[in-house]
Length: 291
Image (cartoon, rainbow, N blue to C red; front, side):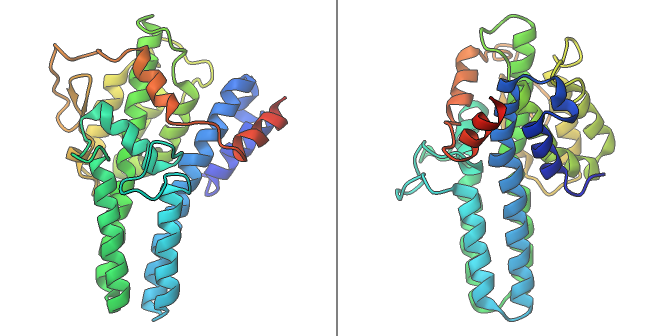
């Protein structure tokens, strides 16, 4: 019910208010980094692409093109490099997609995430539509970008839910991904709630409720998260096939291959976290405030 929910969560994390009152400094730092990388940038991308449509409808094509360029900047960031597909040095949603595609079997032959290549192709289409003044087509393209942007966020939620369950079962030496899962869940819950409120409640019960002191079995139920997402995606424009499968579980169907279930290990958690090196400005600021 908070229109400024991302800002509210970020402020609470910085000052140790609300749910973060009982979080330790490390949990708050990790949450802050994820809020800035995924919640804030996701909303900024959405704002820019929809603003581009409005500029187009006003025949302000230069600003429409500029807004799309800004959206791509928020998606990729500045340290991916100039090579096609970028590097593995990024911090933002584009990098998250590349990390998650390894776990979900959704990498392209180029080693980039399939959804990244799809999103970039949509942005190219959008730029062409701006140049042609085809604002109706641009609006449709923007809606497709909106849907595709959810894929790496959804994958991140599912991956965190699995790692948290493994942590509770002492099947991993990692400390779990509770702050990360909390933030990524908050980034998709408004959209999931619009699609299917019961699914949003299920995801919240596993990934959000009780943070930062989640306990088993409530927070150790990755299948509840997967099935909730599966059910909700039927009422969205997200291509479920782009989400893929993890640990033998197909997100689209909920079916699983018993030989593959729960092969995720602490190594996979470390790979997940290694995708998020310290952001010089944002995390350094968090470190200063939280000392």
